[in-house]
Length: 147
Image 1: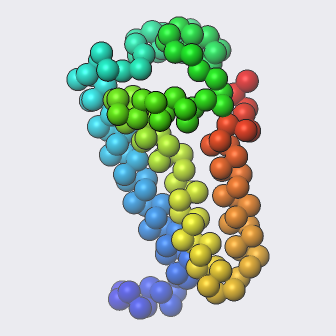
Image 2 (image 1 turned 90 degrees about the horizontal axis):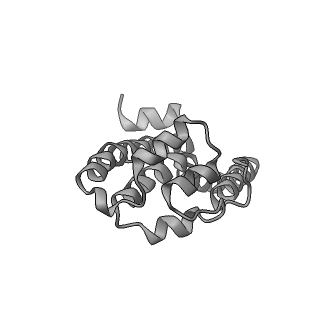
């Protein structure tokens, strides 16, 4: 099928959403494949000892106890501070993969909402903005269900 025929069947908002989600997920997966290699190659540049972290997780400890075991002071609203402070470490690269993977919907809704606005489908624009707001609240740490 030619590109014109596809656009007649599927709206541009759906094409942009799918394309953005597709390539963002691929980028996230590639980063998530490379990050463990970097973590193993450069262990002294990591934020914490991953063996201790995994042991604490498998023992069923609470999130605050896991961070304490890792030797990292972490608050539930401090993820972004922790990420930006360690962005050039192997752990920071792994965090980037996680952030991209978790924000696929947010990133894909931006061009989709723009297309809805261009077509004057304001109900869908509002729904898109509402979902984007929920995702941003969850990513900001203002909404916390981890306990």
